[in-house]
Image: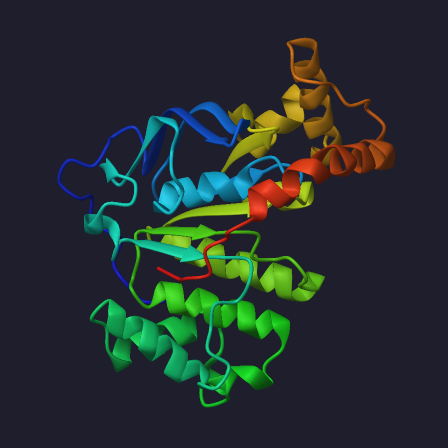
Length: 287
């Protein structure tokens, strides 16, 4: 994708492209996010990692401005999250492909581009950026799941956003497609786009420059993959993450025993009751 690096907007926070302060979301009486404080550096890939039900989707929705915040604040590109000034600056790709099956790839991208006053040239650029030029004239109903995910990504890219928020974009993709998609994410970051990518697969942490580790709505750590490995005393990032969970348990967060497959199963079981609450009313629109 040939484009110049995005320029900082007047008044943009120098602390990061996204800055959260005591960010709290309570749904009913259930705390979903609990006093999060962090800053996401601009022009990098930040991974949002944690088991299902840890609050990843809720946090992303708060960042793009479609989740009501109970207390605290989150600022995006120097503005309060969700303000109209950000509508053309933030791209949001949900887990479910947000495309029209009766339109072609090009038709979908041009439709979403028109919402941001973008034309055919920007649509062609976005389609090329996700590697779908050969399928541009095909209806999306005829595409594979991996291709549909890339159409959604192109629909977000057509606005030329400065921040791209992606909710588990590699779910269901085979290893080859995952590797291809991460390569495209790196190319976008090299162009100056800030990416926030969620995943529950710890091996994907190695593709990120910064990591936010979530569990049960709490931010356990913000660190680099190398720092995660050192702090968790393991080159295996999943084992390192589990070690940090165990540390957190000693400080008041319920611990999970450090035992690979059993640990992963325990995390998933503990998250089942929270998953429905965290994933309900998921916005299917693409900014």
